[in-house]
Length: 126
View 1 (tube, rainbow, N blue to C red):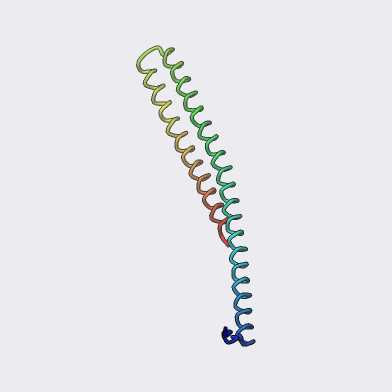
View 2 (view 1 turned 90 degrees about the vertical axis):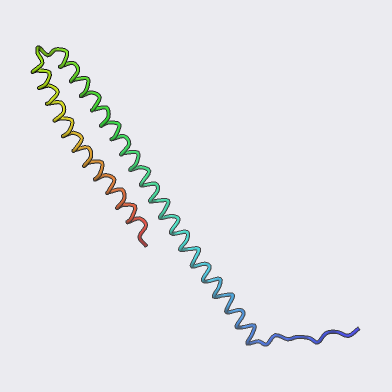
């Protein structure tokens, strides 16, 4: 039985292949480092957003509680009103106060949400 001819790989070709593998490994290591950094930034951003979301939710509940309390206060005042004119004045005052409160609350919530979005954007920047 004849042996196939021995095929020798030239040293230059082996060196070239070795360099190629080394460069590929280095590129992969760089990619993994950057990917891990991005994941870490995303986790930080999600954590911050979750905490801010919890704060916003608590504040929204506080706003709702204030609104209900104001409505009960109005109801108590209305049942003690002496005439229709006093009822209208109570209702008018209540509506003005509610609109002012809603305006403040909307601005406050908007400011908080904007701050959360800006913080998330800063966290994600390289």
